[in-house]
Length: 111
Length: 112
Image (tube, rainbow over all chains, first blue to last red; front, side, top):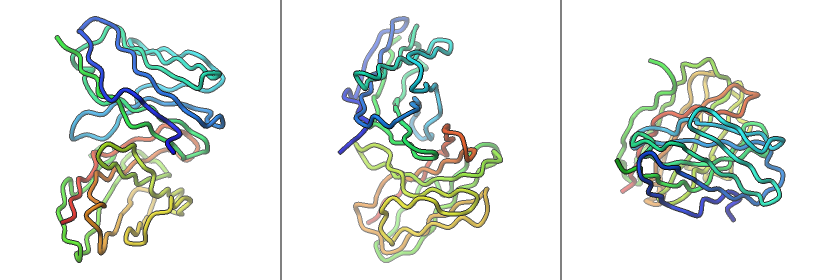
């Protein structure tokens, strides 16, 4: 049973608009959440993270929101750029060195 | 070379072959990881090494054998694999106490 789920396999957004990627989890012991971005033929690269004691973290165009009661987090990208087109993974930590990943969402930003 | 490197980038092997995947990190980290990413599945953690000691084996079949001779190098020895083992194998590293993991580009493995 997947503890971290990304229910949208793909998302298409117009350049300049907002991209919202969603992630749901089931394990209430997760205490830290991360988003990674992956381009083809490259490994995932860390994007942004949030501790479970916070509900928002912002870094430039990227903001992550955490709703603990709903066990839901989202990544907002504003404004979206064509270079943001990639696969985005959310990940959650239940113990040191142990990350559980979602299945990924492919974002396509159209010029 | 910077970051995390993996060789080879692509590997095709028969079920009776023995091969090894190599990972090297140039970040001064002390934890290293092997992940498997199969088609349409999430990344699955296979092994974790902290200061060269294996601290996690996520119920991985014995046909996968990891080796960590030092904090900078990690190997995955493969023998008598099955076609369902075909996947992207990713190596990652981190400072032992931190959560952010840095990934290599992966080895695309095909088992015939």
